[in-house]
Length: 521
Image (cartoon, rainbow, N blue to C red; front, side, top):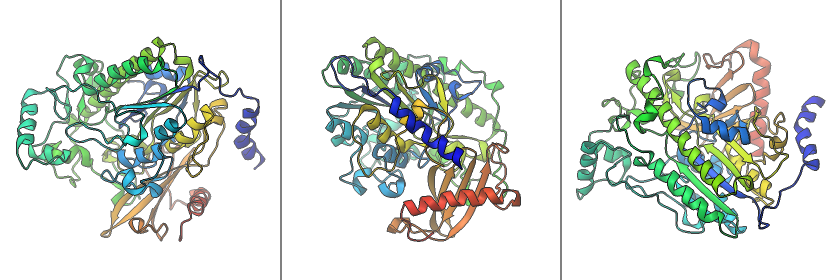
């Protein structure tokens, strides 16, 4: 017990001796470069992947700290981003789907860029930061969060839905011209007969696709903001590697598709509830896989699966190149050593493991996210180190405030990770918590996952979260051991050998419920 408390408290004691925030030239607080990447799982060289080509992620990792056990609060874009940007859990934002916007539930909530704007920062955003985008391209940008209108990267009028294929673009534009054409992205995809899952034959510059234009515009913004008196908060949101897997041909050419391996395990864990499975709705939607219905349990064919994995790698390398352009641009301004860089992905991604594609689960491949922090303005912060302790993306708000010496809002849920930046071997919390709803016997239930350093414990709770009631009977339980079973092959909740672990994880879950003021648990 004493060792546990020493491990938790040691980073806090180290802070007493650590250097505070260093004033930069001109005397202002450190700048913040806030980089969001859509659908990026930790399939990166700095996370140990032996195949991917991601030298710029390595470059950022060498300057800062990589969190290897960081988790999204809900493994789908809108809820995850709402949680990160407000520092609140999904049950508090009440954003559990893609259609609900933060302000519709919490009109007075303060977001990260809004808070820094109020504290003297020039807050500027570009790309995908908030919840969603429309087929026409505009981002839901939450105008009150920014110091100026949200920046739009130059449009490529030859592209549609991220594609360069002229025939597909013409079909999309024809549908858009009809009086009753839906502006809903998935409806539009269905209206044009669906779209392919990838595009790889175009030998074009990076800026032919949107993320390249976002990177180029961001570099110009860095030059402008660095020359100003006030510190800046620049939010840059990249869309890839989100479907469809579109990237210039040279990034596809980095990989030999024939050598890429399929997922080692393509079955659900033995003993897992059947409703936790999802067949890759996002791939099947819009006729992604040749018109298979969304509920189809049929596996994706091996040839297509291998191409999808190839496309995912290609898009990761494409985003790596855009990250390199950002880092080069920041360095050219002379502000690299006075800028805190936080890079996060909104969740992970299934690549065929358990027969699952995309995200939308409480399993490791969906909740585990890329999370990196670099702060060269403080010489005592670790460089080139990794943190294995569980952390949560919603910790970002408190962490950034702590690093620059700004008071965080008093009601946010996250913790400052600053102690772990000084002592990467420390630990601040017992688990990271994720959640995702499912249908069960004709009604919605909510699954909660508590991820410790070794285990994942999931409870499927029959509460009426839409009515604002938290709590209720537990319908099913799952338990996984990542030391002995990293592929989640078997639900261990009924294994007598794990009885003590089950009790320990259930205690962690019950403590969470009490802290969240659940009415019944």
